[in-house]
Image 1 (cartoon, rainbow, N blue to C red):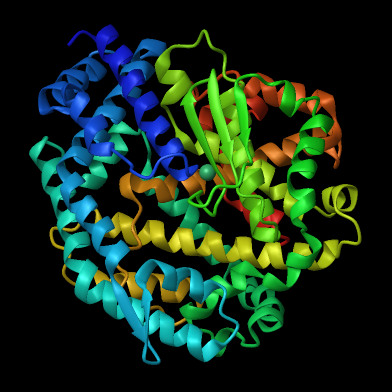
Image 2 (cartoon, rainbow, N blue to C red; image 1 turned 120 degrees about the horizontal axis):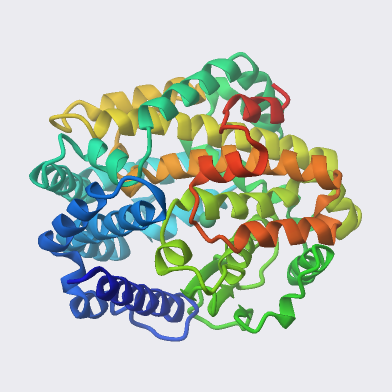
Length: 492
Ligand SMILES: [Zn+2]
Protein backbone atom coordinates (compact mmCIF):
# COMPACT_ATOMS: atom_id res chain seq x y z
CA UNK A 1 0.00 0.00 0.00
CA UNK A 2 1.40 3.43 -0.83
CA UNK A 3 1.94 5.70 2.15
CA UNK A 4 -0.73 8.24 1.25
CA UNK A 5 -3.38 5.50 1.11
CA UNK A 6 -2.05 4.08 4.37
CA UNK A 7 -2.42 7.49 6.05
CA UNK A 8 -5.97 7.98 4.80
CA UNK A 9 -7.05 4.51 5.88
CA UNK A 10 -5.29 4.78 9.23
CA UNK A 11 -7.16 7.99 9.99
CA UNK A 12 -10.49 6.45 8.92
CA UNK A 13 -9.76 3.46 11.20
CA UNK A 14 -8.99 5.68 14.21
CA UNK A 15 -12.14 7.71 13.60
CA UNK A 16 -14.33 4.60 13.50
CA UNK A 17 -12.64 3.04 16.50
CA UNK A 18 -12.88 6.19 18.62
CA UNK A 19 -16.49 6.76 17.58
CA UNK A 20 -17.44 3.24 18.75
CA UNK A 21 -15.67 3.86 22.06
CA UNK A 22 -17.43 7.18 22.46
CA UNK A 23 -20.89 5.75 21.69
CA UNK A 24 -20.44 2.75 23.98
CA UNK A 25 -18.95 4.54 26.99
CA UNK A 26 -21.27 7.55 26.64
CA UNK A 27 -24.14 5.09 27.04
CA UNK A 28 -25.49 5.62 23.51
CA UNK A 29 -25.09 2.00 22.38
CA UNK A 30 -24.86 -1.25 24.31
CA UNK A 31 -22.29 -3.08 22.22
CA UNK A 32 -18.69 -2.20 21.45
CA UNK A 33 -18.08 -3.77 18.00
CA UNK A 34 -14.28 -3.52 17.94
CA UNK A 35 -13.92 -6.80 16.03
CA UNK A 36 -15.98 -5.37 13.20
CA UNK A 37 -13.89 -2.18 13.04
CA UNK A 38 -10.61 -4.11 12.98
CA UNK A 39 -12.02 -6.51 10.39
CA UNK A 40 -12.55 -3.61 7.99
CA UNK A 41 -8.91 -2.47 8.29
CA UNK A 42 -6.92 -5.71 8.54
CA UNK A 43 -4.60 -4.52 5.75
CA UNK A 44 -3.18 -1.78 8.01
CA UNK A 45 -1.78 -4.25 10.50
CA UNK A 46 -0.25 -7.05 8.47
CA UNK A 47 3.32 -8.11 8.85
CA UNK A 48 4.00 -6.78 5.33
CA UNK A 49 2.61 -3.36 6.27
CA UNK A 50 4.88 -3.27 9.35
CA UNK A 51 7.91 -4.30 7.30
CA UNK A 52 7.23 -1.79 4.54
CA UNK A 53 6.91 1.04 7.03
CA UNK A 54 9.98 -0.12 8.88
CA UNK A 55 12.03 -0.04 5.71
CA UNK A 56 10.61 3.38 4.87
CA UNK A 57 11.41 4.70 8.38
CA UNK A 58 14.96 3.35 8.10
CA UNK A 59 15.42 5.05 4.74
CA UNK A 60 14.80 8.56 6.03
CA UNK A 61 16.46 9.66 9.24
CA UNK A 62 16.13 13.44 9.22
CA UNK A 63 13.42 16.06 9.19
CA UNK A 64 9.67 15.91 9.11
CA UNK A 65 9.38 13.08 6.62
CA UNK A 66 11.41 10.85 8.97
CA UNK A 67 9.17 11.74 11.91
CA UNK A 68 6.03 11.03 9.97
CA UNK A 69 7.32 7.63 8.85
CA UNK A 70 8.29 6.69 12.39
CA UNK A 71 4.91 7.70 13.82
CA UNK A 72 3.23 5.53 11.18
CA UNK A 73 5.54 2.63 12.01
CA UNK A 74 4.70 2.91 15.71
CA UNK A 75 0.99 2.90 14.85
CA UNK A 76 1.37 -0.18 12.63
CA UNK A 77 3.45 -2.12 15.17
CA UNK A 78 0.91 -1.38 17.91
CA UNK A 79 -1.91 -2.53 15.63
CA UNK A 80 -0.02 -5.66 14.54
CA UNK A 81 0.53 -6.72 18.15
CA UNK A 82 -3.02 -5.71 19.04
CA UNK A 83 -4.41 -7.97 16.28
CA UNK A 84 -2.36 -10.89 17.55
CA UNK A 85 -3.52 -10.52 21.15
CA UNK A 86 -7.11 -9.44 20.46
CA UNK A 87 -8.66 -12.86 21.19
CA UNK A 88 -6.85 -13.23 24.48
CA UNK A 89 -7.69 -9.62 25.43
CA UNK A 90 -11.35 -10.26 24.61
CA UNK A 91 -11.31 -13.43 26.71
CA UNK A 92 -9.70 -11.47 29.56
CA UNK A 93 -12.45 -8.84 29.34
CA UNK A 94 -15.16 -11.51 29.30
CA UNK A 95 -13.67 -13.32 32.27
CA UNK A 96 -13.14 -10.09 34.22
CA UNK A 97 -16.74 -9.08 33.61
CA UNK A 98 -18.23 -12.41 34.72
CA UNK A 99 -15.81 -13.38 37.50
CA UNK A 100 -17.23 -13.48 41.02
CA UNK A 101 -15.16 -13.32 44.18
CA UNK A 102 -16.34 -14.19 47.68
CA UNK A 103 -15.79 -11.99 50.70
CA UNK A 104 -17.30 -12.80 54.11
CA UNK A 105 -19.66 -15.30 52.49
CA UNK A 106 -20.96 -12.75 49.97
CA UNK A 107 -20.39 -12.90 46.21
CA UNK A 108 -19.26 -9.73 44.44
CA UNK A 109 -18.18 -9.09 40.84
CA UNK A 110 -14.40 -8.87 40.29
CA UNK A 111 -14.57 -5.42 38.68
CA UNK A 112 -17.14 -4.16 41.15
CA UNK A 113 -14.80 -5.25 43.96
CA UNK A 114 -12.15 -2.75 42.82
CA UNK A 115 -14.66 0.09 43.15
CA UNK A 116 -15.94 -1.31 46.45
CA UNK A 117 -12.37 -1.45 47.80
CA UNK A 118 -11.68 2.20 46.94
CA UNK A 119 -14.88 3.32 48.68
CA UNK A 120 -14.75 0.95 51.67
CA UNK A 121 -14.08 2.78 54.95
CA UNK A 122 -13.39 -0.40 56.92
CA UNK A 123 -9.74 -1.51 56.75
CA UNK A 124 -10.42 -5.16 57.48
CA UNK A 125 -12.90 -5.37 54.67
CA UNK A 126 -10.56 -3.56 52.25
CA UNK A 127 -7.95 -6.19 53.07
CA UNK A 128 -10.42 -9.03 52.53
CA UNK A 129 -11.49 -7.59 49.15
CA UNK A 130 -7.85 -7.26 48.09
CA UNK A 131 -6.99 -10.83 49.13
CA UNK A 132 -9.95 -12.22 47.20
CA UNK A 133 -9.10 -10.12 44.12
CA UNK A 134 -5.44 -11.18 44.20
CA UNK A 135 -6.41 -14.83 44.43
CA UNK A 136 -8.73 -14.40 41.43
CA UNK A 137 -5.98 -12.70 39.42
CA UNK A 138 -3.54 -15.51 40.17
CA UNK A 139 -5.97 -18.37 39.43
CA UNK A 140 -8.29 -17.14 36.77
CA UNK A 141 -6.73 -14.21 34.91
CA UNK A 142 -2.99 -14.79 35.35
CA UNK A 143 -2.63 -17.39 32.58
CA UNK A 144 -4.31 -15.03 30.09
CA UNK A 145 -2.10 -12.07 31.05
CA UNK A 146 0.90 -14.32 30.63
CA UNK A 147 -0.26 -15.48 27.22
CA UNK A 148 -0.77 -11.87 26.03
CA UNK A 149 2.69 -10.74 27.18
CA UNK A 150 4.45 -13.85 25.89
CA UNK A 151 2.79 -13.33 22.50
CA UNK A 152 3.99 -9.71 22.38
CA UNK A 153 7.52 -10.77 23.31
CA UNK A 154 7.59 -13.54 20.71
CA UNK A 155 6.28 -11.28 17.94
CA UNK A 156 8.83 -8.57 18.70
CA UNK A 157 11.64 -11.12 18.29
CA UNK A 158 9.93 -12.59 15.27
CA UNK A 159 9.92 -9.14 13.63
CA UNK A 160 13.69 -9.04 14.13
CA UNK A 161 14.13 -6.95 17.26
CA UNK A 162 16.21 -8.46 20.10
CA UNK A 163 13.34 -7.93 22.60
CA UNK A 164 10.00 -6.23 23.10
CA UNK A 165 11.80 -3.51 25.02
CA UNK A 166 14.21 -2.90 22.13
CA UNK A 167 11.30 -2.74 19.70
CA UNK A 168 9.41 -0.09 21.70
CA UNK A 169 12.61 1.95 22.19
CA UNK A 170 13.16 1.86 18.46
CA UNK A 171 9.66 2.65 17.15
CA UNK A 172 8.84 5.20 19.87
CA UNK A 173 12.36 6.71 19.78
CA UNK A 174 12.57 6.41 23.56
CA UNK A 175 15.83 6.08 25.46
CA UNK A 176 14.36 3.96 28.23
CA UNK A 177 17.72 3.30 29.91
CA UNK A 178 18.31 7.06 30.25
CA UNK A 179 14.77 7.51 31.57
CA UNK A 180 15.40 4.65 34.00
CA UNK A 181 18.50 6.47 35.30
CA UNK A 182 16.44 9.64 35.82
CA UNK A 183 13.73 7.80 37.73
CA UNK A 184 16.30 5.87 39.82
CA UNK A 185 17.73 9.29 40.67
CA UNK A 186 14.27 10.52 41.60
CA UNK A 187 13.71 7.50 43.88
CA UNK A 188 17.05 8.11 45.60
CA UNK A 189 16.48 11.87 45.93
CA UNK A 190 13.03 11.44 47.51
CA UNK A 191 13.78 8.36 49.62
CA UNK A 192 14.51 10.22 52.87
CA UNK A 193 11.56 12.61 52.56
CA UNK A 194 9.07 9.95 51.50
CA UNK A 195 8.00 8.74 54.98
CA UNK A 196 7.63 12.22 56.46
CA UNK A 197 5.63 13.44 53.44
CA UNK A 198 3.32 10.43 53.54
CA UNK A 199 2.83 9.74 57.27
CA UNK A 200 0.53 12.62 58.30
CA UNK A 201 -1.68 12.26 55.23
CA UNK A 202 -1.83 8.47 55.45
CA UNK A 203 -2.81 8.67 59.12
CA UNK A 204 -5.41 11.36 58.49
CA UNK A 205 -7.14 9.41 55.69
CA UNK A 206 -6.57 5.73 56.57
CA UNK A 207 -5.76 5.77 60.28
CA UNK A 208 -2.59 3.77 59.54
CA UNK A 209 1.03 4.77 58.97
CA UNK A 210 3.52 3.30 56.50
CA UNK A 211 4.59 0.56 58.90
CA UNK A 212 1.22 -1.16 58.86
CA UNK A 213 -0.26 0.07 55.61
CA UNK A 214 -1.30 -2.49 53.00
CA UNK A 215 -1.76 -2.03 49.28
CA UNK A 216 -5.46 -2.59 50.00
CA UNK A 217 -5.50 0.84 51.66
CA UNK A 218 -3.89 2.76 48.79
CA UNK A 219 -7.01 3.34 46.62
CA UNK A 220 -8.92 4.53 49.69
CA UNK A 221 -6.06 6.88 50.55
CA UNK A 222 -5.88 8.28 47.02
CA UNK A 223 -9.65 8.70 46.93
CA UNK A 224 -9.61 11.06 50.01
CA UNK A 225 -13.40 10.91 50.34
CA UNK A 226 -13.32 13.33 53.26
CA UNK A 227 -12.53 16.18 50.86
CA UNK A 228 -15.57 15.52 48.66
CA UNK A 229 -17.91 17.95 50.41
CA UNK A 230 -15.76 20.87 49.21
CA UNK A 231 -16.11 19.71 45.58
CA UNK A 232 -19.84 19.90 44.85
CA UNK A 233 -21.37 18.48 41.69
CA UNK A 234 -23.05 21.75 40.79
CA UNK A 235 -19.71 23.60 40.56
CA UNK A 236 -18.02 20.94 38.44
CA UNK A 237 -18.84 22.09 34.91
CA UNK A 238 -19.20 25.81 35.81
CA UNK A 239 -15.67 25.80 37.31
CA UNK A 240 -14.27 24.29 34.11
CA UNK A 241 -16.18 26.76 31.95
CA UNK A 242 -14.94 29.67 34.12
CA UNK A 243 -11.33 28.42 34.06
CA UNK A 244 -11.32 28.15 30.28
CA UNK A 245 -12.98 31.58 30.16
CA UNK A 246 -10.07 32.97 32.20
CA UNK A 247 -7.71 31.60 29.55
CA UNK A 248 -9.76 33.33 26.87
CA UNK A 249 -11.41 30.10 25.68
CA UNK A 250 -15.20 30.03 25.37
CA UNK A 251 -16.09 26.35 25.81
CA UNK A 252 -19.56 26.84 24.37
CA UNK A 253 -18.30 28.67 21.30
CA UNK A 254 -16.09 25.77 20.16
CA UNK A 255 -18.27 24.09 17.51
CA UNK A 256 -15.86 21.16 17.23
CA UNK A 257 -15.91 20.40 20.99
CA UNK A 258 -19.01 18.65 22.31
CA UNK A 259 -19.57 18.63 26.04
CA UNK A 260 -21.70 15.59 26.78
CA UNK A 261 -23.15 15.94 30.30
CA UNK A 262 -26.51 14.24 29.74
CA UNK A 263 -27.28 11.53 32.28
CA UNK A 264 -27.67 8.05 30.76
CA UNK A 265 -28.02 4.80 32.71
CA UNK A 266 -25.07 3.07 31.03
CA UNK A 267 -22.77 6.08 30.74
CA UNK A 268 -19.22 5.49 32.02
CA UNK A 269 -18.85 6.57 35.67
CA UNK A 270 -15.61 8.38 34.76
CA UNK A 271 -15.12 11.35 32.48
CA UNK A 272 -13.26 10.73 29.23
CA UNK A 273 -12.21 12.50 26.04
CA UNK A 274 -12.96 10.98 22.64
CA UNK A 275 -11.05 12.69 19.81
CA UNK A 276 -13.14 11.16 17.00
CA UNK A 277 -11.83 13.52 14.29
CA UNK A 278 -8.91 15.79 15.21
CA UNK A 279 -9.60 18.69 15.48
CA UNK A 280 -13.11 18.66 13.99
CA UNK A 281 -15.04 16.40 16.35
CA UNK A 282 -13.87 16.01 19.95
CA UNK A 283 -16.13 14.86 22.80
CA UNK A 284 -15.71 15.56 26.48
CA UNK A 285 -17.99 13.13 28.26
CA UNK A 286 -18.84 13.14 31.93
CA UNK A 287 -21.41 12.07 34.43
CA UNK A 288 -21.50 15.16 36.68
CA UNK A 289 -21.28 13.43 40.05
CA UNK A 290 -18.92 15.67 42.04
CA UNK A 291 -16.24 14.91 44.63
CA UNK A 292 -12.54 15.69 44.37
CA UNK A 293 -11.76 12.76 42.11
CA UNK A 294 -14.39 13.84 39.58
CA UNK A 295 -12.87 17.32 39.42
CA UNK A 296 -9.40 15.89 38.83
CA UNK A 297 -10.62 13.51 36.12
CA UNK A 298 -12.77 16.13 34.38
CA UNK A 299 -9.96 18.68 34.26
CA UNK A 300 -7.52 16.02 33.06
CA UNK A 301 -9.83 15.04 30.23
CA UNK A 302 -10.53 18.71 29.47
CA UNK A 303 -6.76 19.13 28.97
CA UNK A 304 -6.83 16.39 26.33
CA UNK A 305 -9.98 17.89 24.81
CA UNK A 306 -8.53 21.39 24.41
CA UNK A 307 -5.29 19.96 23.06
CA UNK A 308 -7.03 17.89 20.36
CA UNK A 309 -9.68 20.53 19.71
CA UNK A 310 -7.08 23.22 19.00
CA UNK A 311 -4.80 21.25 16.67
CA UNK A 312 -4.16 22.99 13.36
CA UNK A 313 -6.47 21.20 10.87
CA UNK A 314 -3.88 21.71 8.11
CA UNK A 315 -1.33 19.42 9.84
CA UNK A 316 -0.77 15.96 8.39
CA UNK A 317 -2.55 13.00 10.01
CA UNK A 318 0.56 11.80 11.89
CA UNK A 319 0.85 15.09 13.82
CA UNK A 320 -2.86 15.46 14.53
CA UNK A 321 -3.49 11.87 15.67
CA UNK A 322 -0.20 10.04 16.39
CA UNK A 323 3.17 10.93 17.94
CA UNK A 324 4.38 11.06 21.53
CA UNK A 325 1.42 10.76 23.93
CA UNK A 326 3.58 12.24 26.71
CA UNK A 327 2.63 15.55 25.13
CA UNK A 328 -1.15 15.24 25.36
CA UNK A 329 -0.82 13.68 28.84
CA UNK A 330 1.27 16.67 29.95
CA UNK A 331 -1.50 19.09 28.90
CA UNK A 332 -4.01 16.90 30.74
CA UNK A 333 -1.81 16.93 33.89
CA UNK A 334 -1.42 20.70 33.60
CA UNK A 335 -5.20 21.07 33.87
CA UNK A 336 -5.79 18.48 36.59
CA UNK A 337 -3.01 20.07 38.64
CA UNK A 338 -5.29 23.11 39.08
CA UNK A 339 -7.41 21.07 41.51
CA UNK A 340 -4.53 21.27 44.01
CA UNK A 341 -3.56 24.91 43.32
CA UNK A 342 -4.59 26.91 46.42
CA UNK A 343 -5.02 30.07 44.30
CA UNK A 344 -7.29 28.29 41.84
CA UNK A 345 -9.27 26.66 44.68
CA UNK A 346 -9.80 30.03 46.36
CA UNK A 347 -10.94 31.57 43.08
CA UNK A 348 -13.29 28.80 41.99
CA UNK A 349 -14.55 26.94 45.06
CA UNK A 350 -15.74 28.71 48.21
CA UNK A 351 -14.72 27.89 51.76
CA UNK A 352 -11.89 25.69 50.70
CA UNK A 353 -9.05 24.23 52.77
CA UNK A 354 -6.32 24.94 50.19
CA UNK A 355 -3.44 23.95 52.48
CA UNK A 356 -5.05 20.62 53.38
CA UNK A 357 -5.73 19.80 49.78
CA UNK A 358 -2.17 20.70 48.81
CA UNK A 359 -0.70 18.40 51.48
CA UNK A 360 -2.79 15.48 50.25
CA UNK A 361 -2.07 16.20 46.58
CA UNK A 362 1.70 16.29 47.31
CA UNK A 363 1.59 12.96 49.10
CA UNK A 364 -0.51 11.53 46.31
CA UNK A 365 1.87 12.74 43.59
CA UNK A 366 4.95 11.50 45.41
CA UNK A 367 3.33 8.09 45.75
CA UNK A 368 2.39 8.02 42.07
CA UNK A 369 5.82 9.13 40.91
CA UNK A 370 7.62 6.60 43.08
CA UNK A 371 5.19 3.88 42.05
CA UNK A 372 5.69 4.64 38.34
CA UNK A 373 9.46 4.93 38.75
CA UNK A 374 9.51 1.46 40.31
CA UNK A 375 7.12 0.16 37.66
CA UNK A 376 9.42 1.45 34.90
CA UNK A 377 12.41 -0.33 36.46
CA UNK A 378 10.35 -3.51 36.71
CA UNK A 379 8.95 -3.30 33.18
CA UNK A 380 12.45 -2.68 31.78
CA UNK A 381 13.44 -5.97 33.39
CA UNK A 382 10.24 -7.79 32.41
CA UNK A 383 10.27 -6.81 28.73
CA UNK A 384 13.87 -7.82 28.16
CA UNK A 385 13.67 -11.07 30.16
CA UNK A 386 14.02 -14.40 28.34
CA UNK A 387 11.27 -15.85 30.56
CA UNK A 388 8.52 -14.48 32.82
CA UNK A 389 9.35 -16.92 35.62
CA UNK A 390 10.64 -15.19 38.74
CA UNK A 391 9.28 -11.83 37.55
CA UNK A 392 6.67 -11.85 40.33
CA UNK A 393 9.50 -11.56 42.88
CA UNK A 394 11.11 -8.67 40.99
CA UNK A 395 7.73 -6.90 40.84
CA UNK A 396 6.97 -7.25 44.56
CA UNK A 397 10.50 -6.22 45.52
CA UNK A 398 10.69 -3.12 43.31
CA UNK A 399 7.24 -1.80 44.20
CA UNK A 400 7.58 -2.71 47.86
CA UNK A 401 11.00 -1.00 48.17
CA UNK A 402 9.79 2.19 46.48
CA UNK A 403 6.56 2.50 48.46
CA UNK A 404 7.72 1.01 51.80
CA UNK A 405 4.66 -1.24 51.73
CA UNK A 406 4.56 -5.01 51.50
CA UNK A 407 3.48 -5.44 47.89
CA UNK A 408 1.52 -8.46 46.60
CA UNK A 409 3.13 -10.61 43.89
CA UNK A 410 -0.08 -11.74 42.22
CA UNK A 411 -0.57 -8.69 39.98
CA UNK A 412 2.88 -8.84 38.39
CA UNK A 413 1.43 -9.24 34.89
CA UNK A 414 -1.93 -7.48 35.39
CA UNK A 415 -0.16 -4.28 36.49
CA UNK A 416 1.68 -3.77 33.18
CA UNK A 417 0.72 -1.09 30.66
CA UNK A 418 1.17 -2.00 27.00
CA UNK A 419 3.89 -0.31 24.97
CA UNK A 420 5.72 1.16 27.99
CA UNK A 421 2.90 3.64 28.56
CA UNK A 422 4.45 3.94 32.03
CA UNK A 423 7.31 5.85 30.37
CA UNK A 424 4.88 8.18 28.62
CA UNK A 425 3.23 9.07 31.92
CA UNK A 426 6.58 9.66 33.63
CA UNK A 427 7.78 11.92 30.81
CA UNK A 428 4.41 13.69 30.84
CA UNK A 429 4.72 14.46 34.58
CA UNK A 430 8.18 15.87 33.99
CA UNK A 431 7.06 17.95 31.01
CA UNK A 432 4.04 19.24 32.96
CA UNK A 433 6.28 20.36 35.84
CA UNK A 434 8.52 22.29 33.45
CA UNK A 435 5.59 23.79 31.53
CA UNK A 436 3.80 24.89 34.70
CA UNK A 437 6.97 26.57 36.02
CA UNK A 438 7.33 28.29 32.66
CA UNK A 439 3.71 29.52 32.67
CA UNK A 440 4.06 30.84 36.24
CA UNK A 441 7.23 32.66 35.35
CA UNK A 442 5.75 34.25 32.25
CA UNK A 443 2.21 34.97 33.39
CA UNK A 444 2.32 34.88 37.21
CA UNK A 445 1.07 32.34 39.77
CA UNK A 446 -2.51 32.78 38.53
CA UNK A 447 -1.45 32.00 34.93
CA UNK A 448 -4.73 30.12 34.52
CA UNK A 449 -6.61 33.46 34.69
CA UNK A 450 -4.57 35.13 31.94
CA UNK A 451 -5.85 35.15 28.35
CA UNK A 452 -2.21 35.55 27.18
CA UNK A 453 -1.39 32.21 28.83
CA UNK A 454 -4.35 30.74 26.97
CA UNK A 455 -2.96 32.12 23.72
CA UNK A 456 0.46 30.60 24.48
CA UNK A 457 -1.17 27.23 25.19
CA UNK A 458 -3.20 27.41 22.00
CA UNK A 459 -0.01 27.96 20.03
CA UNK A 460 1.40 24.77 21.57
CA UNK A 461 -1.84 22.82 21.07
CA UNK A 462 -1.95 23.86 17.42
CA UNK A 463 1.19 21.76 16.80
CA UNK A 464 -0.60 18.54 17.76
CA UNK A 465 2.08 15.97 18.59
CA UNK A 466 4.53 16.88 15.88
CA UNK A 467 7.26 17.37 18.50
CA UNK A 468 7.93 14.86 21.24
CA UNK A 469 8.10 15.85 24.91
CA UNK A 470 11.85 16.63 24.81
CA UNK A 471 11.63 18.65 21.62
CA UNK A 472 8.58 20.58 22.79
CA UNK A 473 10.33 21.56 26.03
CA UNK A 474 13.52 22.41 24.18
CA UNK A 475 11.61 24.72 21.88
CA UNK A 476 9.67 26.30 24.76
CA UNK A 477 12.44 26.91 27.31
CA UNK A 478 15.68 25.46 25.98
CA UNK A 479 15.75 23.04 28.95
CA UNK A 480 15.72 19.24 28.86
CA UNK A 481 13.36 17.01 30.83
CA UNK A 482 14.76 16.77 34.33
CA UNK A 483 13.25 14.65 37.08
CA UNK A 484 15.11 16.71 39.66
CA UNK A 485 12.62 19.48 38.86
CA UNK A 486 9.81 17.23 40.09
CA UNK A 487 11.48 16.64 43.44
CA UNK A 488 11.93 20.41 43.76
CA UNK A 489 8.30 20.97 42.83
CA UNK A 490 7.28 18.65 45.68
CA UNK A 491 9.38 20.70 48.09
CA UNK A 492 11.98 17.94 48.47
ZN1 LIG B 1 -4.79 11.18 30.04
